[in-house]
Length: 106
Image (cartoon, rainbow, N blue to C red; front, side, top):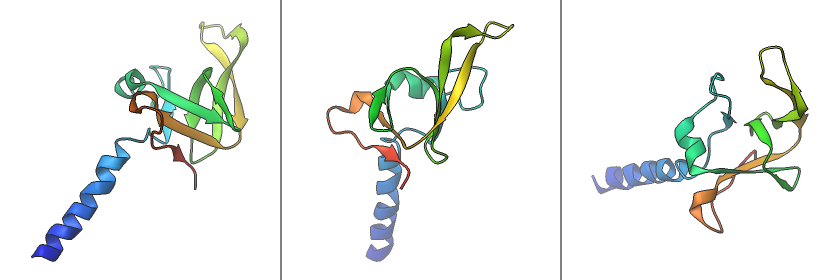
């Protein structure tokens, strides 16, 4: 039975670690399916192509892309036009201090 407890504990460790890494796909647009207000309130840091970016509208770590606003241009409904950029994406929660766990493709 102690083996079962050990495996249960090992199964629980990744779950708690998973809560410390941001989701794979996230958007700041409330109309998008990838929108999550609770996650955004914690604060997300994004590194795209080895540069920390603060202008990201949406990202996907597994697919390796981010969406950024294309200047001040908006569509006829008032939504910002975005450009999809591809490259390595890393994300972390900013409220976890100096060395937070980083979610990246790997």
